[in-house]
Image (cartoon, rainbow, N blue to C red):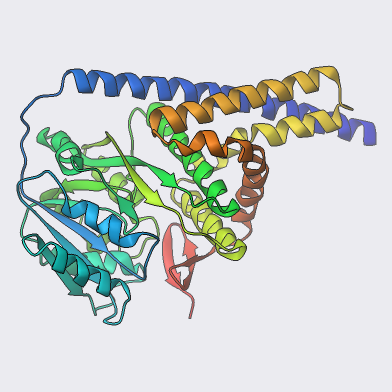
Length: 389
């Protein structure tokens, strides 16, 4: 009986390892395809593009690392006409001081700060967006998270695809700037993995069906057609919901060639665990089938399991080595190639630790439905939020 059980575990582990190798290979194919798309886009880019006036929304709560520099990058855009609307839900939010400082440095830039004192639903970010949208002057919107830093040509490049009527939403991949604490570095590698999963989903589904909080660019009329921000105020993954509803209107979600940046905090262990669980449960409740498929991405875990239960057979060592080589190749191509993240080389030695931690969070995500988000706790059911009092 024991021998049979060991044999079953060994077979499952081998199957999991081979599946992971297939996934890594698929990610490499997706990354190469994207790099080719970018090359063709650069070669065929036009010298002139439409530059419609645009409203940038920055919902805030609390502060992030290097937050002022993130804000400042939005004021340095090579773009003829735009406004930036910041929104907070509390009049004593510490981010307000940074916005006021920004106004002082850029007096010619159209910058609004709105105190969004109405609570329209459990997602405070979206509740703020509802109130911010009422103050927007323009009919093209860009929403991105408070921790996002952008390049000078960001607006030109993310708005260009919206010239095509069949495109309803533009979104961006992002790279992380780690501060070289262990938790921050592991999170940075996790973001590279996440972006690889985005490219895989794009190819499997024949295009993206969701947006990323790093950038959401769209027309106000398309937002109104899906019920406005009000339709998203009860959901945790508002970026996912926005993209899904845009696609349901027979419009496409376009992945921009732009890669933006986020600066990671120096997480304590407790903060790191809470953040990873929130991310895992967000994806699980938003894309349950895709999230279940993540089980085939844990190549190192499966290869080590096969090594142990095969009695350290020669073939198991060879399988483990193959996993490590292909896994590192995938991460370097995604990190350095696609995301242009120079830190990936420096952090790659932490990849085995990242790959052994990831299955634990994947499993733990199924053990509950609570998440911690910006100081509050919520219960998530079918993607919807309920605040824990």
